[in-house]
Picture 1 (spheres, one colour):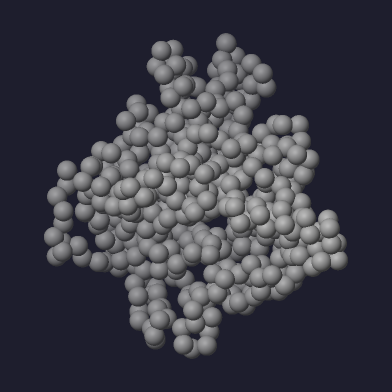
Picture 2 (picture 1 turned 135 degrees about the vertical axis):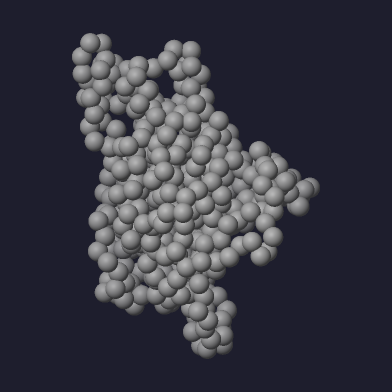
Length: 516
């Protein structure tokens, strides 16, 4: 176990001079400066008439969905949400159009989160992803028809299987208010955990009640890193060559959506108000027409597409030990595993066991026969810490003990990831995308977000060096933990300006239990 560093052992250096501990060679990883971010206020209106349990779309009333912060004395209001109105443009957005570089990938993930209903005023509107929008529409229609989401018994939070009108599972919805430490979590175990043992409550390195954003952000990072961009390959099977296609990302597509259903966990007041408004609408229609909303309030959460034919990793790994895979199929598994490692390491997932990543295995020639092995990384809600774990638990990556973690990263994986990391603007563009996504949360704190990005930059720095040095996944997780922070250049009052230089700091403090 590494001893705790003395204060004088950590010396900040400019990012251009950063050198990983394992080697004195400099890295090509660069961080472009970001101008001070600001957001202007815009009020959007919410309201509609609907029955309890109906998936409603809300638009056109005077009920505000934004919450204001206290003013800082200068008369300017710092706001928690960006503009939700489709017809009003944000000056910050106009400035970014002029200053930010063109990107090779779409920004639909952040747009759909921050502006639900850009053109139609609806909450769930995905103009850049009509296929996903169609799935959400099918889910809403099923709820309207009485096919309600089904609560999942496993886990420590309220999560639901969302189905279509025929009862087929479309995805998994995890409301923000029903997260492990949310105020409407239906699982009583976490309530007693908080009540009886507050000193050990939660994970000290994570921002509470931000799991749904972590789920969505993991899908964004997966897309930006291109972990699903795999060319068609041919594998030898049964004396011949079979073409396989591994084009799916590691994380099933995940976005933030609004849903409402009777089966969600609401408090007594919300249900009583819904019943009262419905009764008033039936008995006194003239009065009921003035209600902004008749049904239950919609819930914001992450919606992850359901993947079929997958089993927990333990299920297949035990079978692969008993009956080893053919060499070409084993290479496919190794390639997919390396992408899982890269994702978890970049987002610093604190909850990756062999029960929350999945494997789908189909022998080529059976069924559709296009994909031999595919990995899906689910349950990404406990990632993006604002510091490395350094209190009681270490939250290690459980896949580090697998045989696949002892094999160096393949040439294909190194070329794929380094093609992104070699772009000098990639890291800063990724941070900007995540900023626009995280700032949609009412509890957004810019200072804490910058700490989260500092951890992620350090993880990317280590990953870049590990890929250059042809290290194994187990060697990657054993590298010294690094935090790359942006320097502060001062400011006036509560306004702090972040500079253009970065400093590298080694985080040497270790948790009490280093293997748990």
